[in-house]
Image 1 (tube, rainbow, N blue to C red):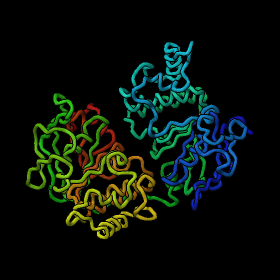
Image 2 (cartoon, rainbow, N blue to C red):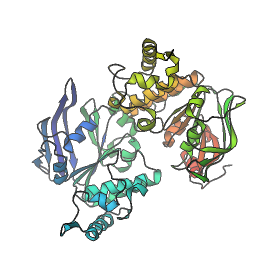
Image 3 (cartoon, rainbow, N blue to C red):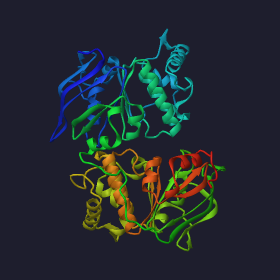
Length: 512
C-alpha cells in the first residue's frame, strides 16, 4: 500500500431492512490532507462516518477499510476503540458538559490522578500544552457555558487531539459559526494539516470545500460518484455530481413583480426582556411590498433574529416605534396574535423552535392551526388529514406517509414541514430566518422555487440569511443591519457582497 494513503475504503456496502444505505463505496484519503465529503441528505455520508467512528462495528457491513495499511476492525460498541486507534469525530451538535471547564471537558474520563485524586495542576498544564501546540484560542480554566459556539468547537477539537487523533472528522462544523469564527476554524485546520493530522470535512456549504479541502468525494444514493482533487472541480460540476442533473442556475428566477407596500416597521426600538437597560433594536425602519422577497443581512449579533422575533411577538419589549400591516398599526403581544394578523415565522433553528421532532408530519403541519379542524372541543381527524396531505403534496415532502415522525426526515423535508405549518395559517407576511441552513443543495433549490411560487401568489417574504450569495440571488431588496440598527436598504441591482459586508461591519455607514 502507498504510505501516503492513510485511509483506503474498499467496496463498503451497508444495508438496513429494506434499504441499502451504502453500495460498493470505495475511495482513498491521503495522509495529512483535508478531504471533503459531500452529497444530498440521504446520500450516505452519516452512515459512512458512523462506520469509520465505530458506531456501526465490523461485521455489520460488507467490504474492507484499511487504516495505515492495516484492516480497521472495530468491535461492537467500539466508539472508544476508534478514538484509541486515532479516529475522532466532532459532531454538529457539540457534546460538552456546560458547567465544567475547558480542561475538565478535554480530559473527561482520562483525568491525571495522583494519590486517588485528580491532579488539576497537571490537567490544566496538559490542556495548555494542547491549545498552545495547535494555536487554539481557549483558556483551560474557562467554564464552557460562558464560551461562544466557536470556542466550544475549539474545545471539541482539542478533546479529539488530546487522544492523539490521526484522523479528525468534522460534521457540518460551521453551521452555527460567525464569519470570523469560520475564518479561525479554517486557520486551525491548516495548522492541523501542518502537524500531519488528516481531516474529513463534511458540509453542505460548497464554497467551504473549495476554500479548505485538497480533494472531494461526492456521494449520491449511497454510491461514490467521484473522488477528485479540489482544484479540478468547480461549483457547477460539484452540484451536477451531487444531484445527478445539470442545474443551470443556483437561484431560480421568479416571475414576481412586487406591488404596493403592505407592511411597515417604523423607528423600532426594543430592549432585551432579561436586561431592560440593554437596547437591542435601535431605530429599525423598513417597508415590505406585496409579492416581494426582502432580504435582511448582517453579522451574527447584529439584531437580525431579534428583529423578526420581536415582530412575531416572541422576544423583545418594544419601547418606541410602530409596526403596521396595511394602514393599521399592530400591537402584537405573542405569536398566536401575530398569526391571527397574518404574520408567520419559519425560525432559524427548526429542530428546537419549529418542530416537535417526536411527533408525526401530520401533527406538526396542523399544530398551529387546530382551530381550523376543531368543533365542540373535538378535532375533525379527516379534515386535519386532508388539509395536511394537501400541503405535503404541494411542497413535495418526501416520506412514506404523514404518520412518520419528523426526527426521521432529512433537513430539507423537515424545513418543508415547518413551512407547511405556517402556510396553512394563510399568512400575508412570511418571515424566514436562515431558511436553507443545514440542508443540501438540491433541497435548497426546491425551497427557492417554493419561495418564488409564494411571492407570485401575493405572499410577501422577509428572508434573513447568513449566506450573502443567497441574499443576492433571491432578494428584490436587502436591508443591512449593524449593532441593532438598519444601516441601509439596497435595491438588489445595486448590492454586492463587498457593499453588504462594509455596511454589516460598520466600515461604511453611508453609501452614496
